[in-house]
Length: 370
Image (cartoon, rainbow, N blue to C red; front, side, top):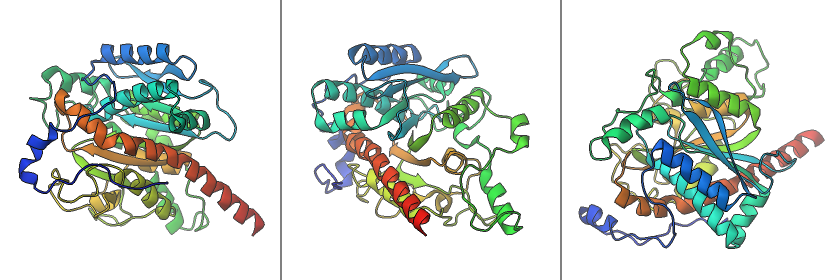
């Protein structure tokens, strides 16, 4: 895989916002903020353009009854093929972080157009991977932020679900269950750290319908790799998101697959136009990220019940968070540049699903021969 940073260097951050408008794209895509109705229409347009490789479906409903629409991109939509890995991108768990939502809508248009034009890279992705894009995991929160627009939307307006839940951290805390079992020797120390069951208490907990829909989706489809797009920073975070030591706000807490997670995080960050250039990561309020634009989630701030940790521990799917832009709700005029910033990264990260499959196959071979 070719890892490089594209784009011209920016010698001084003083003219950053002026220079932003100089970035253009040659991709013929719909660069605008889409309401729920417009999002649904655009997905239908893409499906009609590429009916042989796309399928629209919903994974459930939000608290207000809005369907959580996903689009599948595959050479055999609707079918799980043996040996073909399942990949997912989700966005909008925090409804006011809208850039990820628009990036996924742009990505589905781009892949459809490039597939039709015969782009060999895109054709390989479509033919060798079953790709799922869920642009808006929290449409109710998005509506609240969209109503006031990018000029007035604040840090928290629309962040939570309609019942006041942070969807991204609304999953069961499986870390504590695993670690307690290990410490008390209720299970072998080297137990497999995946397929940890959901505890009974969680079924009676305050859980957003959006979260329950995501869990059902994650259990139904054998995803191998996933990325959830967030906003407000420029960094990629990877599990664990919770520190093992109690009462510690920040502490490196790696998984047994730390080397794989670091590679996956680097594959996205290193191909982003800004993440690995400290002089251009102007949104960082603190120097928490390494120079390579990645960080272990627990060493940033501890958080129980994250989507990333749950995905890894319950379904054995590697999940990372991509913070794709400084501005959570950028102006429409900035979307072409943000697309250019993230386009290569979005493609490169998807391509890593084959690396995960090959690594697991090698591990099973070695373990079988031991």
